[in-house]
Each structure stands twice: as structure tokens, then as C-alpha cells.
Image (cartoon, rainbow, N blue to C red; front, side, top):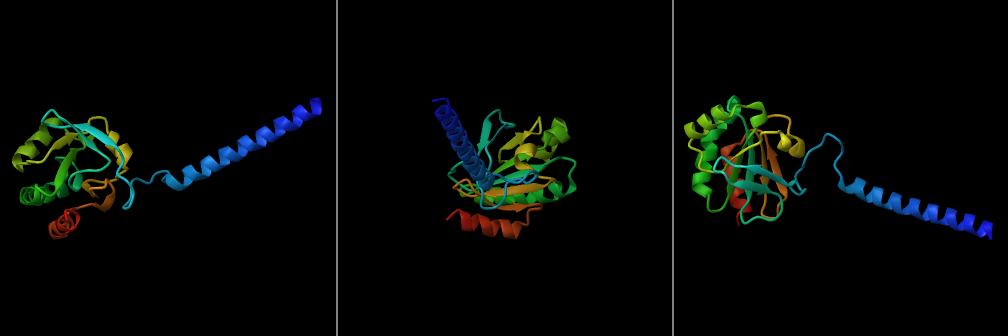
Length: 176
């Protein structure tokens, strides 16, 4: 009788180990390697940040329009160079395309960021990342970095400096 209990315990232990290995193998296939952020073809990670207008903005999941999630700081020279193009493209395509300009506030000053918003007349939502959460979630290494996200919530492309003609072409492709 005691022998049957031992055999039964070993069988249950082996079955539990098999289930654990199967679940671990599944998670390894869907998880990104350490230090690697979101990539084209993958769903945009969930993100929720406060906007300058007092609203809370969410990223992740299906959307009505494609989205350019643009990370910037007021001291960043390439960010300042691409700002007029982002403003122009948004004004031209705002009915087909969204921009969320995420200020990397943890590395910037709110007053300087607000001055830049005013200087370039940003009409799109400006979000503030006070704690650097988006840096952890999106794993970008430099700014400017923009994530182009389609209506299905998948990352289509990652850009480090927005090239206006290329972005305009992508907006037209994605908003059809």
C-alpha cells in the first residue's frame, strides 16, 4: 500500500513538471528577450499617461486611427528639428491619423517642455512621463523615437527621426 502511494506521488510530480515545462516553453515563445523592446509586427504595449490638457491617454489595443507615439524632450535638437513637420502632418491628416507627443519628463523640465509646445504650436495631445514608465515599457534608447502603430494596435515601424515624406506615405497606407 505504501509503495502505491510513493508511485502515485512520483507520477503526480512528473505530470506537474511536464505541465510547468509546457507553460514555460509557451511563455518563452511570446516573451521578448531581456533588454529588447517592442518590435514591428508585435502589439504595442499598454501605456497610460496624463496629458497637458488634463486627460489621460491610453495606448494599446485597437484604435480608430493609426497613431504615431513620439518621444521627445525640449533639449533634444533632432526633436526640435522634426517638430514643425509633425505639426504640419498632424494638421494635414488629423482626420486620418493621431499623434501622441510623449515628453520624457523624467529627463526634462515641465516648463521647458511647455515652452516648446507653445513654440511649435502642438495641436496634438502632449503627454508627460514623469516617472519614466514608458522608457521601461517601450525600451527606447534615444530620443526622438517614434512608434507607428496601426488601427489593430500593432507596431508597424520604429523611427528615430521622422522623415516627413516617408511618414506621410505611411499615414496614407495605414489610414485606408
